[in-house]
Length: 248
Image (spheres, rainbow, N blue to C red):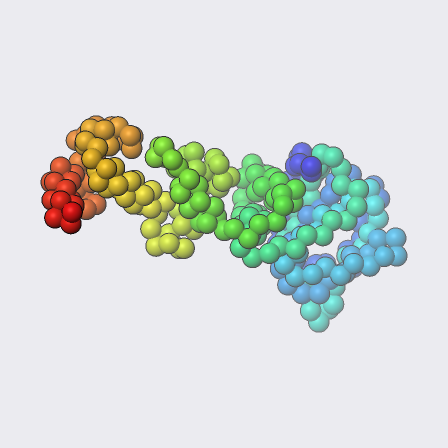
């Protein structure tokens, strides 16, 4: 497992290549490249690797290599250099597939490329952690929804969700809202209200339902229920009971 250790000199940027970059074997750090566009080539010991668009590359330490591009199609890339544990011993190439966690990590890396050292270090650490994970096509919103659907005890807070998924609360909320047109809290509330309705249909009392769904009090539950369904739970459950009797 490769982990971020520290920066070489706190330098990172997104730019086109200089003409015929050459790195000597005295280097003790790796360079991380994300290829945004263009045509570029990495050469080491006579072996040439073409840098592909939407791919990540992590270079080995203490190797002499060159980086050059097509002057008519210059290489645009995001890059930074840092030490890792353990040291990288071979060139690594990883495709960044849209919709994956790695793609989200790279997006944050590019967003914070000019941020302070601490924020940038966290973004790079996130990218490196994703390189050791099996690929997944699940989006952040889909992972959040699966988490909420699996909450059997109906106890939920955004801080726990953010810690579980490894994203900020703001990022999760934006992604969820874009995908489902509701926030995670609103979606959780829908699940909880549906569970409340189901329990009332089973004949449970308001106080029992409030306790089982982790409301602070029966009063708080009644207010939330009325806001969602338009009727307080006692009145609603009475109407449902009458309808059930009429159907027998």
